[in-house]
Length: 429
Image (cartoon, rainbow, N blue to C red; front, top):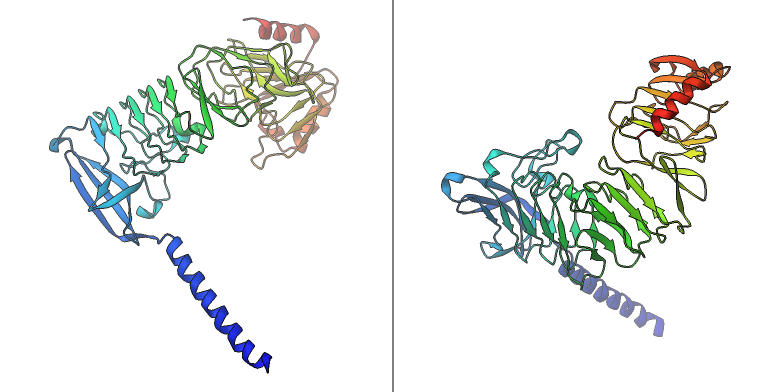
């Protein structure tokens, strides 16, 4: 008898639970944006176009029009609300066009690969931006191309700073980062060559500032970004790593790396201005040999520093190359590879960042092994190739095996006197 009445009771209770959970989910799940019915408001020289969330609690300003005939455009003051609805998002929304391109908040295409920052003369007058505290999200490339912007304070509730957020803001000097910032992209400030000073609340749980110009993670003490303010940079003792792209806008000519640094990310020190890198003698992870910084544990190249003539000699300490190494100090025109080079991964032989590479010298009696070859066929250097006498057949076959033989500009062998002259050029300042 008990089973007969307990079974329907079980299903009644289950239905109550499901209905309750459904109601709770409806309360916590944020409704989509109403893309079909945008709203707008105008204030002075600026017209703001926005989407409203389905629950009408939030506004997303996806485009701003500028008409200098209607008022002063020196200060872009983003409204905290439109029609009584709080503005929480700003920046380009992909749904607003079907081109597949990235745009700034003014509707101009941003293409950093081709040097397009979205600049337009109509925004030449904008010197400052006011972003209200209601804003929690700033989209990619939002303020890209504001070349006359001088300073900005990012609201404390913004948690992510996305790629190219201020790309090309070449007169931007000071930035106050949000107190709740949790994610930072180093390329957010690409092209901000005047950026000197960063600040952030000491209450921020993820990041801190060192010397007003270096952004560090609090927990790992990793250096994630350096401004353009210092010509001589000394990374503080206690920093454990240098992140990918950390020096992307730095103007430092000299960098001092402390004993505590244990990791250096992919192309972390890639920068044309750096001419001198020094590493603490008691650093257990990295050391300097000639024009190279290498990892002690596997003799892998980490940073290459060509001289002012564009000559680079890879130290004979180097036995491994991969695609993560940085080139500091400018263009590479001539490379002399290590005679002890054994392993190459990916595009580790590609020192031609800007199409200026003219000659490469291989000094080993056997070509290195290549693994993880990139699909674009860039595993081997394409330039005039010089190899030791009696090794030409081996290297030609090596190039043929990697489908690069027909791309070589010229083949030749060298004697020791010729190699010595090239090495002397590399050793010259």
